[in-house]
Length: 390
Image 1: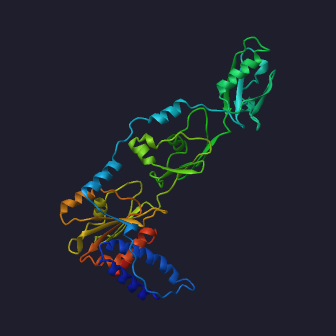
Image 2: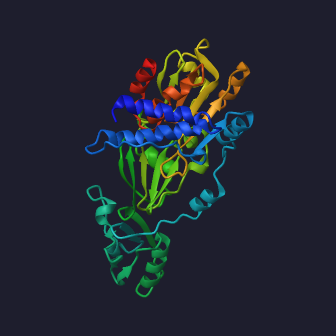
Image 3: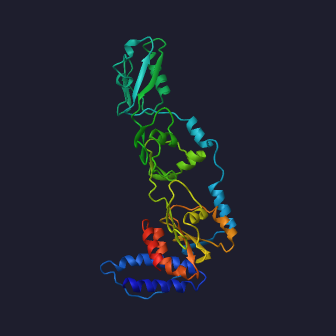
């Protein structure tokens, strides 16, 4: 079907869905379906003529009114207890931390009063150059005792083992062991930091905040809210913002060999405000998090002469793989004091705020333009122009 007929068909489907209690859910589903089918209409062989009725999809779309109870729940999640001290599990990990030597590490071994067993250093030779490199089989060679295994052991265990073996040749040997160079274990920091790259794991525990700091800190374009820790095939999203700005130590982690810390950019950190507001368009969030009322204010406020007081919607698409399509939150500001609830309703990146015009049927005319803008980043500007033409 051509573009005009297609638009009429989807408007009809949406209008019919309004007659049932789940009209808004039907509208949302119709838009999603329209978005999917429209791609076929322009593909070779994609011309399909058929008639169908909008299915019952109430169970696929969550529709929630913004009520004091909902706002109280959001406030608890956003401003709940912030850890002022380090969590017990992290404190235990740091207290019990021990570095274990691995292949590639360089050990500096000193036997006091026996200079023949200690390679002398100097201004022209670094400890790394004079030390003992752990071989791929995890062993090193030392005079008198020959080759012995050191990989997987702490420096204190190596010192005690070497002291015991040397005691067969030297009376009461005094041995000191330390790591001159760390090459066996690394973590990697990538993304929006000053100096991305590998960082060695040493005898000093390395945490998430330490690694980001050693990488020069986040850049101006860094997304502090969605730092990704990849470990052993699993992916964990952490908030550097909560850790650094609010002292939430539950977001900190002790890093291990092979961990990859990725800090994404702020490219998708925006909210679209459309409909009956004075300045519709995108609001760039950066690392800031704003509320529904703040978003409406930054868009110039609601146009009172044309806006429907009960028709302020926040469309929040569900994540990929979720059984639901989207959540639509509705705020009724027939009583202006209801705007106070909006001051505590936090928006998320990629949310779409839409203020309908009276009568409510106007919602049906623009829903097919609105939801695709929520699901397909980069179309907000075009959507704003098309809605203005309706």
